[in-house]
Length: 528
View (tube, rainbow, N blue to C red):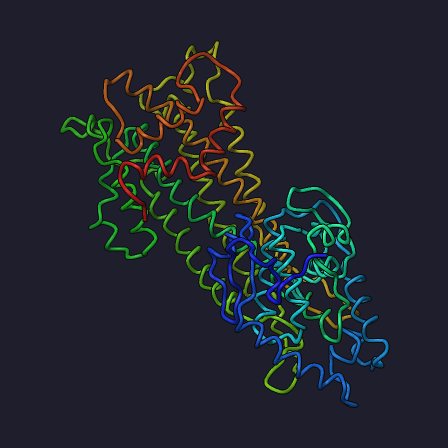
């Protein structure tokens, strides 16, 4: 087999994210989890790992029992394990805890939780050997992804079952997918990459599985996506304000300043810039305009989109604290090992649940704007359902149904998971966070928000085309660039009914890929 260097990377391998004693940045997590970046352990991490391992080995040789080193776990912690049984103890722990069930978790989530577990190992607080940490880095670097199942984590002690499936692969057991996505036994994938499985030593089993890494990884990924989606929601709202003949005056900075929420100010500033130069808005900014004020879904967009931003900022602060944490139990503190409760997922679970609320609300407001376009009593002169020949054609009627179905699901997903707790481990773990469940539903909610915003963009683009034809006016340069993007991507403008689902999916892809946001910002620069 090929040799693996002490940092877990093939000699001469590609550039990689260095995992050291300090915290990873969110962008590094995304680069490894989603972008497939490689990984290496820093020299500071290797030194810290060696120091902590010496403490564990000293305790393992002592006559006095030490939890997690020479005892059983959880409700079985009172049993002292003799030296000759401790390797079996570690194997048994990992095998028994790799008890997940259901469909496979996404590759990016598994890579995120592996990276974050490696980051904790690198702090020198867990007591693993450097070869064990190096092998985890090697799996990430070679794109080997253990099969982790949907169900099994209660979020306390951390994400035990998901992390156990990853630890199992380090032992050369269980199933993995290689870099090409092929399902195979872990032993075969390790051999193909020139990696040797490890036999876990004292304390290593616990160190590999006792963390909040799964829920934290999903939080970091969700925040990364929400930063894009909330800006894209501003783009969609601007298109709707134009298409529904709304006013941009309510977004003026002096009005936002008297309610100084930072997210609101950012969203309103985005709307002002997105609507600058709009011929549609200017066309009804005349003395004979009798409209007093727009509906809440138009007028209050900065208040809702801004509050969502502020919520995301709070969640990001929590994520930054957790990224700087060494979550394990017990932990190495100077020359001893101490039991603690840092594995409890409540801090992460709360913000995962919190984020699901603004996701649902931003989507709800987006759906309301879409619905206004389709109702001839409220759309200010547009054809019913934006249909070519209303009655013969249904236009975008059912696209709004799809939005409504997703929004309804998002409201269900906004019900918090972290208020639930089911005791486990013979009442030793008598309160759990359910943070994994909160993370799983947030991922589904973020996906739903992208779909809802995409349908609003598609609807507003059709309305702007109809306004241009009827009034002879053009949208703003920024929103016009989005309309042009849709048309050049196969999402056709007004006309007789056609198969809508492919066009909706194209719009969803354009939103997810940042293409909609990029089209607008290519004209006016980055949005706040």
